[in-house]
Image (cartoon, rainbow, N blue to C red):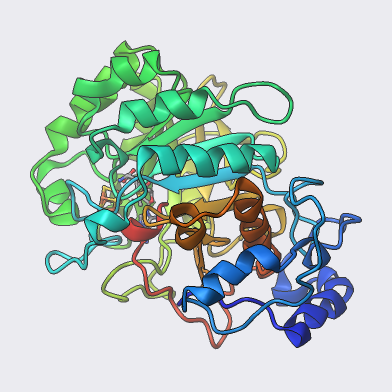
Length: 402
Ligand code: SAM
Ligand code: SF4
């Protein structure tokens, strides 16, 4: 669903509900509010392009609001300042992980709807002027995109507001790393996270519907050889599928000098088969590991979703990302750009804000900035997975960008 523009009543509702919502709407723990009236900072004139284009049905008020859209942090109505932009480079992938994509019949995005390298660079430059400091490239499989290295090069050449280059990282299934890891490193990629849910070949085939475990393992080696450090390994824990490998995966990671991260499975699968009751909870993962290792929690979570533990006396660590049972929405500083130019203010957003009419029309960077501010302004307090009326987003994870 495309996000429509706020009409006057919505706009005033945003303003009215702000202070109440800050007290903890949707059950999230929230930061103190910033002294910025976000709804007021979203002027309407640039958004008019969307309306004229027939993509939106409502018009925002105050066409005479000409405040500088680059003035002030990218903050939502709960005071959360956004610094982390996740960009999906493509919705295509070389694997078909069961929790992410269907086996067949994937409704691919139209090729000409995918943002070009120039368009990605332009949006990222605007985002950096709005206070974004970190960019994570993801997908689908980001390395499938032919110009992935060039995208990294362009992104790392962009400065954030403090004059430092953007910190650019990537989440990948690792399959193309043997070919691309040195070039990615040379292009300035700071970090890679590689996904690996099992060390058993038969299981890997079942979970990803492809026989490519060795390629992923080669990819991990290539990332190490290219000098990436630390390398994080992401695994989604699934009951009856790989939950008996939690300790084995950590053993593997410790032996290889990698940092293991377990992720609670989220309702983002294409088949909409996710089941809250069957989900392996973060605490179960901690309990299983505690039978073998002495786990010591390290520091505060901050805006990081992972609760990180030192394993025995270190230096290895293991992280648990309990997005469902211990959501980090109150500290969320992330905004997402899909491969087809939609801003999503949450993985679980039901609405998207379309940058394409402005990007491919005659919109200015200030217009883009206004739209991004508008998208952030509409962010909900929490993902609401446990709410009675929760609806899974229409896009599968592969098309959102994890
Ligand atoms: N293809 C790349 C990869 O697999 O690393 C990048 C995209 S993938 C969508 C990014 C991350 O999202 C991966 O670590 C994957 O395991 C995770 N992921 C995908 N679907 C998920 C789900 N339903 N719940 C939790 N994590 C999920
Ligand atoms: Fe592809 Fe990553 Fe989704 Fe697996 S999790 S299907 S590798 S996008």
